[in-house]
Structures are given as C-alpha cells and as structure tokens.
Image (cartoon, rainbow, N blue to C red; front, top):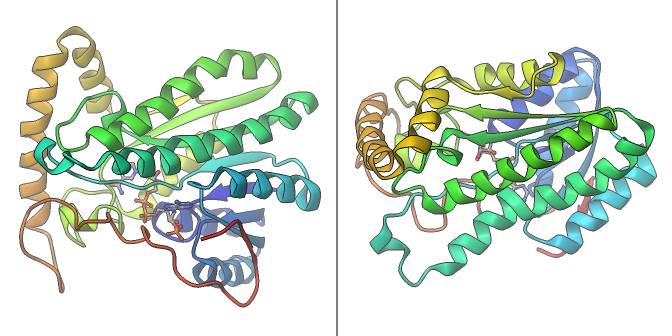
Length: 292
Ligand SMILES: NC(=O)c1ccc[n+]([C@@H]2O[C@H](COP(=O)([O-])OP(=O)(O)OC[C@H]3O[C@@H](n4cnc5c(N)ncnc54)[C@H](OP(=O)(O)O)[C@@H]3O)[C@@H](O)[C@H]2O)c1
C-alpha cells in the first residue's frame, strides 16, 4: 500500500492515476473528501484499489489520528508520497501583520507532513523497508523574494529529511526529495495563470515523482536549480536578488500563456492562497480525520 498526501488534485492526482495503472493499492488523503472519493473510483476503474481518509495537515491531532487509522486498517505503507502543499506569494510589505501566513504554510508544508512521516518511519524502520518521497521546490534552496514563507516551509522539510536520511537508510528506509519546477496546477494559477508557458504538465511532474519512487534516487531536481542552490551558498544576497528578478521574468513569460477566465494581471496570489486552500464539504464515503 502506498500513502499519498495531496491526492485530491494537481500532481498528486496524476501520481495516483499512474500508480493505479500499475495495480497499486493506495490510501488517498487531502481535505476534500468529494474529490478523493471521485479519484478513488477512477483508481479502481484503472486497475488499482484505493481508500479515502481526509485530513487537514495543519491539525496535528488529525494527523496523529490519520497515522493511527492507516497503520491499524491498512498496515505499514510500502511508501509515503508527500505531495500536499500550500503556496503563497507575498512581498515583504504584503507580509506585514500576517504572521499567521507562516503558521498556515508551515502547518501544511512542514509540521503535518513531518508528524505523518515520523509515525510511519517508526514501523518502517522496525521492519527494515519503506520509501518516503517528499516533493519540495527550488525555492527551498534558492531564497526567492515573494516566496519567503513558502520557501522557508519547504526548506525546513528539506533540511529535516536530509538530516534523517542516513539513519533511515541504515534501517532500510529510503528518503528521496523531488524539487519540482513550475507545474501547471491550481497552485500555480493565481500567480502564473491557468496555462503557464514553460510549466510542466501535472502528468510530467508526476513522472518525476514516480521516478523517485522507482529508482534508487535520493534527490531529483532540475539542473538550473542544482546550480542555483550552489551559487546561493556562495553568494546568498546576490542570488536572492537575482532570483527575484528571474522570478518576475518567469511570471511575465508564463502569463502570456494564460487562457480562460481569470486571465489578466500579473501579481500576488489572491488573499488566502491558491485553490484548495479552503476545505470543501465532507463526501458520502471516506473518513474525515479531525475537525475542520
Ligand atoms: N505547482 C507548482 O508550480 C509547484 C512547483 C514546485 C513544487 N510544487 C509542490 O508540488 C506539490 C503538489 O502541488 P500541486 O501543484 O499539485 O498543488 P495543488 O494542485 O494545489 O494540490 C495541492 C494538494 O495539497 C492538498 N492540500 C492543501 N492544503 C492541505 C492541507 N492543509 N491538508 C491536507 N492537504 C492539503 C490539496 O488538497 P485539498 O485542498 O483537498 O486539501 C491538494 O490535493 C506541493 O507540495 C507543491 O508545493 C508545486
């Protein structure tokens, strides 16, 4: 069984459909039960099997209950794939008075996933097998103006997993980190438009995640991000300033590909972040873990 967070949309959904075609058994988690239940049906139709457990990763009690339910009802996962994420683009000036943005982003991108991984690592290490695949972003290692809170939350997850990795490996558990470039999903849409030029498709991004799952890799990242991270270590202030300018350029180029309603201004994400930020209703089946 493979446990997938962020299964309800974007890259996570594509990863689940690709795993379904291989006949895998999946536990799907995110907040939106209706979308998870619909995906579970697609997974079964594609040849896999799926169970739905919704959970808000910002709620530590809910994460503990999710972990307990997974282990009690589905056993120790062969792999945990961490795809849930929340992003937010804000300038320094827009961040004043909004410390809660950091709380929200670290809850989803660091504290929730870390609590879930810890709960799964214990039995995985005891049995001497397992994989943890975490999806982060180039902004984790290249400080990028506008993405301070998002980058910090992804950087923290990255640093935590890198430090755990050797000890986990001694127990037979492989930890891999996948840094994705821009992907055309709901997450990217508020900043880059619904069809950003130059972005990966969710299916191509899913391919990178599956590669991390299959191959004995510990790190997958675009070449430009690897180079940028090295330069960021050597010249941090210069790199951050350059990353800000490069980000503006990428945004201008990407938005030219914008189509459909909502196309228009280049700018900050809408307050509250990209689609998926606010939970939707509870579905007919599937269990919701923790309060909304
Ligand atoms: N798109 C990009 O350009 C890009 C670039 C680099 C890295 N990434 C990373 O790639 C991963 C997948 O992103 P995506 O583009 O597929 O984003 P997406 O389409 O917005 O999907 C995000 C997923 O995370 C879930 N999620 C959000 N907040 C949650 C919470 N509090 N608790 C539980 N689940 C939550 C969402 O489901 P619910 O709303 O149902 O909870 C959804 O399934 C993320 O980790 C992201 O940071 C994306």
